[in-house]
Image (cartoon, rainbow over all chains, first blue to last red; front, side, top):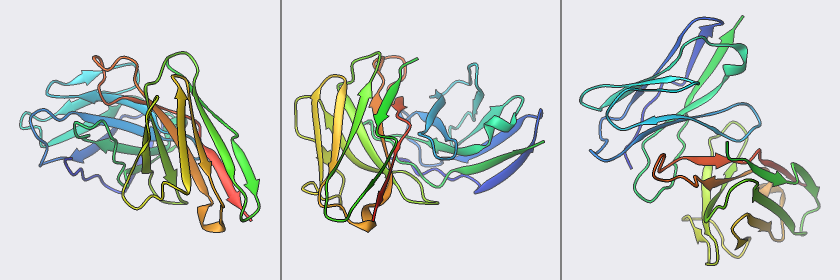
Length: 109
Length: 119
């Protein structure tokens, strides 16, 4: 599966947008980009996924570059409850999810 | 949305005993479930893939005789840690593959996790 690279941590002010980058330069044409998050001591939670087009749902927006080598997860109005580890994953066709180190996002009041 | 539960949420056991953890899909049928392990300050590590009615597929380095997985029904998978030792103390998390794979092929619904402490 494609390797993804994320910054280890980032801070965000409450109420502001949080932009989480992810590099996946080796992604193949049919591999999706998935985002999950894990709040401390809980199971991960699906956020959003995309293939080529930008996507938006009630939780976040996903912007994928035209060459698909990177993407950005946008939390439009971060709240304290969005403090979590965010994982960018490009799963292979065997449906397994490989969690890297992710980005620890801390939302500050 | 789809809900996955785990029981127990916390368990403390003595070294040498066995512990069973249950993972249930509450409002959908899960033909495929996954078991992960997470040590403190580390990421999730996939242990095995569990398919209903067949033997589990274990990841490299995971002892199948120590971590027994049974997926006997479409809503229940169990993980039994046999002869547990302190180094097995960890956060065990299960997930179920989405019942709507045509919408989100790689979406998994995760349980809340089970914190195992072996003394």
